[in-house]
Image 1 (cartoon, helix red, strand yellow):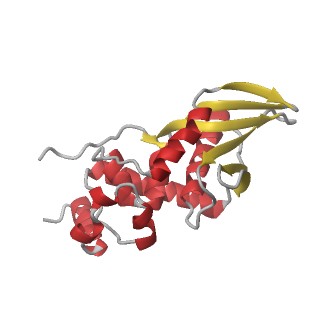
Image 2 (cartoon, helix red, strand yellow):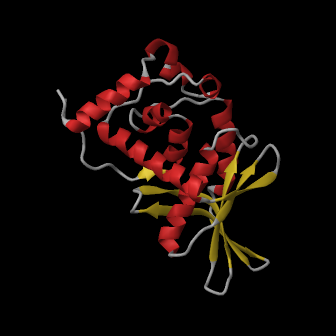
Length: 215
């Protein structure tokens, strides 16, 4: 086996969302290059087809940029924001990211973390704080405001760190058997959590042993 890499390619913003939902799912997609479509992913593709056209629009003093490329060298992130609204202010334009999602608001925080990761990229790119953004859900036709508070920022950065460690290790985490999330996952048949599940503690211990060089 070749040694694990010491550096990794920039992490897609979408991978951060996958990692919050399930770190194993993120590894299957972005490490093992596995993917499977289901109704939810197909609906999401249709929704994002509109924003992928890009372009700038102005209205009521707000500059709206669709499909804006984003990056963060500090967090090693890259991706594209569905929409960023720039509002004029006394110190220049203020960025407000908007992410389009199918369905309705969810019980987990994966969507919020993805949006927060976009905000962190925008802060690094513009040099100005981004305090809030919004998630637009197609089923409800409403925006949900998201405030990038200390807890959400910490969750986002911790998720990026955990995902970076997984990608560097080149090892896919074991299944965690989260029934509600597994049931809606497009990778369920590829993941087979019931067949390959083993205690997460064992996997974590092996990762620690590798980091410490324990035989």
